[in-house]
Amino acid sequence: MIRIAITHAIAATGVAVFLVLSLPLPWLLGPIFACLIAALAGVPMRGIPVLNNAMRSILGVAVGATFTTALVITMASMWSTLILVPVMVAAIGLVGVPYFQRLWGFDFATSYYGAMPGGLQDMLIFGEEAGGNVRALSLIHATRVMVIVVALPFILQGYWGVDLSNPPGAPAASLPLAQMALMVVAGLGGWQIAKRVGLFGASILGPMILAGIFALAGLLQHRPPAEAIWAAQFFIGLTVGTKYAGVTAKEVRHDVSAAFGFCIVLLILSAIFVEAIHLFSLAPPMETLLAFAPGGQAEMAVLALIAGADLAFVIAHHVLRIVVVILGAPIAARLFKPAPKG
Image 1 (cartoon, rainbow, N blue to C red):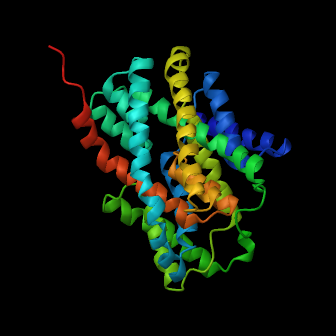
Image 2: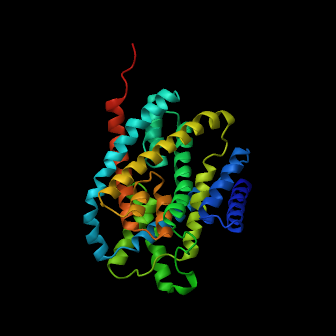
């Protein structure tokens, strides 16, 4: 309990510092940086996984609440960019595996599942079953999410002038109690139902689906309040930062450095796809960047929500990316795994 309390105090300090300095996304980036610095300093930290997942369900409700009949119909027009998602995943694998294996000396399993832009838990499970280094995989994916999440707000502000200081929703006091209760039902109920049926990303996709059903039926007419979105950002940032707890100097020099270099590669690949889509006028540039940036699903939902981007467009591409990685990664890993020597 003491470790949990210290962790939350560190994260809260990060929020306060970002607020005082007027830095972007204080509720998300503040906890990430504060917990990262504390982890590198050797401070023992720990989050509350159940609470962290519950906070992710808020984002699922926020996305689902935006669904309308007109929006669902227009989702069919996304095919021209959705078909590029598997292409990008393949490109990341073709570049990433040699990068980790030849430049940094990781074994094939760690290289492959470290390169794949899937969910952290899924890649750790697949990687461990394949004989990969679970600790290295954890640091690689934590770094991927952190770098992408930290870089994008500055790109959005510097390049497009997006105002990231606007409240992500209406104040809780302004929303009807019945709507708030329906959001709780959609969040907790959707999460538990999705968990029982074994849906990947249950804490986000379950609430999104149930909230979407409520919205399409005309029952849910509001998104979660600003306070709930801020809380979700806080716990997501805390979770990303605490992934570095217990990191050693050797791991920083090797695993984290390798991951940081790969993030630069990912950003370049993302820029190529975004520019190509923009040149052919297939989708708006800001939505395309958020949809093809290989960050975490929850983190990208936060950025899309605050930037005022098309949530359905962004989430649809990230869901497809995760599906492609989860379904294709084990098969591709078996097909391309080098034959044992001797």
